[in-house]
Image 1 (tube, rainbow, N blue to C red):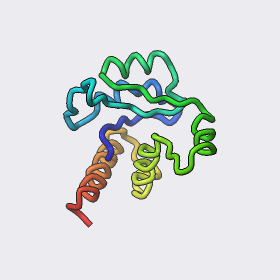
Image 2: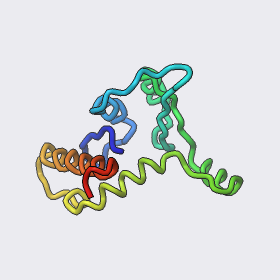
Image 3: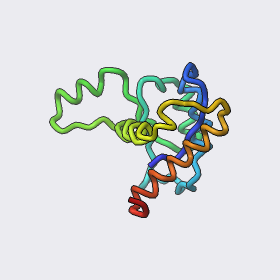
Image 4: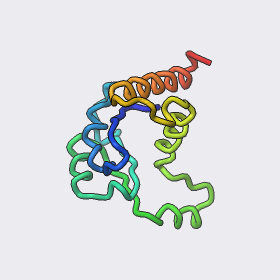
Length: 131
C-alpha cells in the first residue's frame, strides 16, 4: 500500500526527500514500542547518517543494505526476498496507470492529484472494495 508520496524533479536525490515523504503519510501510524518496532527498508541510495538520524527521530528502525549485499544473500539463502520489494511492487502498480507513467501535466499539483487518485485506487483494490 502506498502510504506517502512527494512530487519532485527526477534529478533530485531521493535521500533529500525522506522527511517530506514521512511527513506526507496520511494514515496515523501507531507509536513504535520495544515489542513492536517499526522498520523502514531502504537501499544504498539512502545510506547516509543524516537519513539514519531522521528515521530514528520518527521512531523507525533503519534497514539499509549496501549494494551487493542482497545479491550475496540471494546466492546464500534459497527463497531470500529483498525487503525493498514492497516499494518496487508499488512503483510497478503505479506504472500501470498510463497517465502517471508519462508525466504530461505541467503543474506539480495536477500530477500529485493523479498520484493520490492512483494510490487510492490501489488501496481500494487491495482491500477488495473495487475490482
